[in-house]
Length: 310
Image 1 (tube, one colour):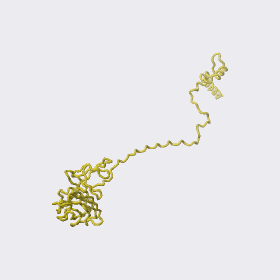
Image 2 (cartoon, rainbow, N blue to C red; image 1 turned 90 degrees about the vertical axis):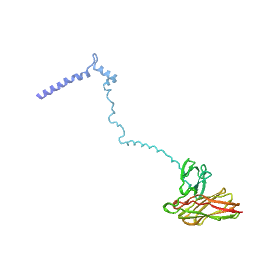
Image 3 (cartoon, rainbow, N blue to C red; image 1 turned 60 degrees about the horizontal axis):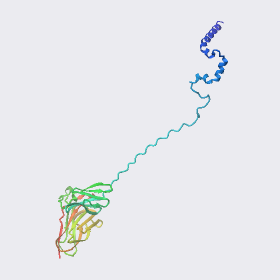
């Protein structure tokens, strides 16, 4: 009995406490009945729901926000790397086809003897060569060639063994061996109109493989008839020559190589044109080369002279 009384008292106290909060919901304006209030709420639903306007909207229960088992979006395509800039290779001249075979001074002009293969040529500054090259300058120590398509310069050294034959050469080659010796062998007197031969002989204690040289002759009294290689280089040697009627003969000879003991290196044939107390043949430039293109020292060569009789 006492429990029931206590329970009732607690319920009455709770109801009394809730009256201040619930009273505004059920009170009516003066002169407004509950029915009038309900009709006003029906006519103005926005005003009636204004207290819920601040609440976020929610999707209806049971509505799916998207496909449950859809495939994930594909990853973004990788960005293509920018292609590396193409750097064009700088053009370069072709391999140098010329080499120095000797040098000389004519009329106060410094010249150089160049060899292209077995072909010899004497050139001076300003001359144009085959293959697009031009001779820019010639000094005692080097010649400068310009490859004109690219304006590229290349300097070729003039070795001591290829220097002017008029200059004294070393009495001995490297390693203590003796320098090679050359000499002319021909008649001391000839008759005008009769063809005669002059032989260039060589003595060398080390191997000789090539001998590009330039020969000058007295064009007023001598006419070249033939140029042939001697027996030193043998039948398989590479031999060529070119005669300039103004008084120059270019010769190139290359063989297997060997030492020489007064061997005939070159044979020239001339026709005497008219009587003269002396007609001269001499070496203007010479290069003796051994194994692997090694220069071979050579002693100065005396000119050949012959008298021409009527």
